[in-house]
Length: 296
Image 1 (cartoon, one colour):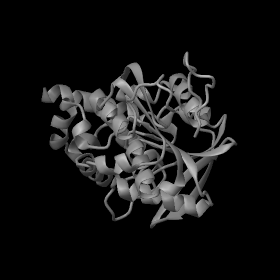
Image 2 (cartoon, one colour):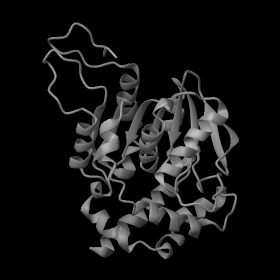
Image 3 (cartoon, helix red, strand yellow):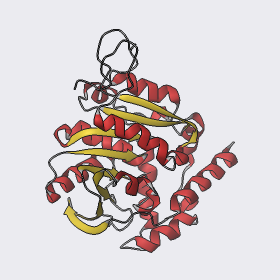
Image 4 (cartoon, one colour):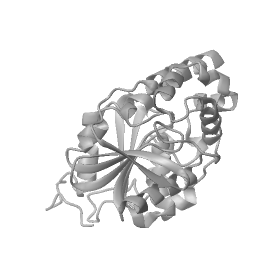
């Protein structure tokens, strides 16, 4: 079983290391909380912040950024120690990353924005909504979690076995060196990400108190169990019966079929089909409704 999990980890790391140059944004830097954060701006419209997964960067997010930029002004960020953003002598934690995003918004004059986060970026987005709710209009949590126990059993079993040595010879190490301000900083980043993935999180109380509408997107073969994603949806007020004369919950849940954790971000057409109606407040019209729009 351990060998199978290690093979899976190598596959994931290799996939996330691929940096296909789809993003066409204008690159800039902002100094926030001691880091020199790289970001790209593209498109026009309502502002949206895009947050990548662990070991990723803007290019490795693929087609989702330019597609979102067709209807939004997208601010794609590279978080602490990732891509062209430097690392500092500070742990990588979800609260720290969320505070960096909040400080970035202040630095560029963004009072409020929609947020799209994938994997590590999804958890960062959740913490941003928890810690800085006034800054988040709507949140798309893509392949995210609120509790370590939500991981699939195979991955939970693998996390305690993770070592820096497992990752430093993988292809994503070479991808890191191509962009990083410190090409030799990859082992230190791996150490911090391993510790991050061991965090218990356990944010049930905070999720239940959220007023921010959240669109949860997950694959049916994702790294987190479907039961966990449904539980998060229920914490946000979802899972009730429609057609009973009451408005639907502001939060939503979408499950992509035949889709693994790393394949979620590649399903751009499906993602947009869920994201745009959510941001616009549109819902499918039922037999007993006279309007297809939410009253929010």
